[in-house]
Amino acid sequence: MYKTIEHQVRHQPPSPEVRAEFRQHDFERLRGFCILIFCLSIAIWTLFDLLVSFIGGQGFTWRSVLLLGAMGMLGVILLFVRNADQFSLLNLLFVALMAFAVRLVVDGTPEDFQAGWLIMAASSILYSISVLPIRRWSFFASALVTWLLLDPFQADGTEPYDLRGLMIISYVAFITGLTLYSYVVLRQAKLQNFHMSRLLLDQAYIDVLTEIPNRRSFVAQAERHLNDASEGAGRYLAMIDVDNFKKVNDQFGHDSGDVVLKRIAANIRASMGEFIYARLGGEEFVIYLWGLDQATTEARVAALCALVRDTPGEHPVTVSIGLTRLDAGDSLSNALGRADAALYDAKRAGKDRYVLWGGDAS
Image (cartoon, rainbow, N blue to C red):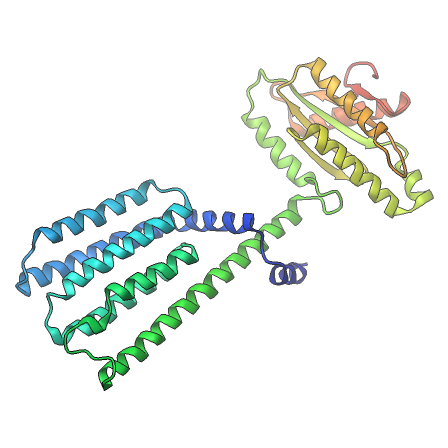
C-alpha cells in the first residue's frame, strides 16, 4: 500500500488546496524556529554594528538606532502572524531591511575586507531563508534583493574581470545555485511527505468503497462530540442496514452490491451531511445526530428511508433504521447496542422503516 501511495504522490501533483494546507501546516510547525531566526539575525547584526561602531571607530549613529528599531518591529509583528502567506511577505521585508543594515555595517570596515564580508553576509542570509517555510516567490525575491544590496563588486578595488573578481563570481554562482537547489528539493520533499501522510490518513479514516468516514473515524468523532456536547442538547444515534442486501449480491454480483452501497452512502451524505456519519462495515451505516428534538429527529430519519426508497437505480433497495436517544452519561457503545436492537425490531416489523428504541415501528 505504501508503494502504491508513493507512486500516486509522485505522478499526481497535489492540488492547490493541498499545497495551501501544506504551507500553513509547515509555517505553524516551524513558527517558533522563524521567530528564533529573526531574533538571532537581529542580535548578530547588533553585535557587528557595535563592534564596527566602537572598535572600528565608525560611531553608533541614529541610523543604527532606526534600523534596530525597524528590525525589532518586524520581529514583534511576527509574534502575531498566523498566516503562512503573510509570513512570506514579512520575510521579504525583513531580508531587505537586514541586507540594507548589513551593507551599512560593512561600509564601515576596511576596504580590503568589504568584498569578503559582503559575500559571507549574503551567503548567511541565503542559507537562513532557505530553511524557512516561505513560498517560492518570497525566496527568489529575497535572494535577488540580498545580492543587489550586498553586491561584492560595489566594494572599492573589486573588479569582475580580474582573478579576484572571477573567483568571487564562481563562488557566488556556486553558493547561490546550491542554495536554490537545496531549497526547491527540500520543499518538494516536504510537500510530498505531507501529501502522502494525508493520503495515508484518508486510508485510515475513509471507507475506500463509499468514500465516507469509516468506523474508526466515526467512533473518534462521536466520542469527542459526546464529551464536548452539553447535556441539554438532543442527541440520537441511528443504525442503518440495507434490506435484502445479500439477495442483491447473490443474484446480480458483488459489483452491483457495491453500486447500491455507494448510492446509499450518497443518500446519507446528502440528507445528513451536517452530522457525523460512517459506514460501519458490510451493509451497515450509522449516523450521530445532535441539536434536534425527538419529533425532528424522527422526521429526518423517516425522510432518509423515503430518499433511499425513491432514489432511482438499477437495483432499488430499502433500508431499516434503529434509532435511540443518548442521555447524560450515556456511552457510545451502549447507544450502539440499543440502536442495533431497535434495528432488529425494524427488520422484524417488515423492513423499510425506522424504530425508536422503546417505541413503536414507523
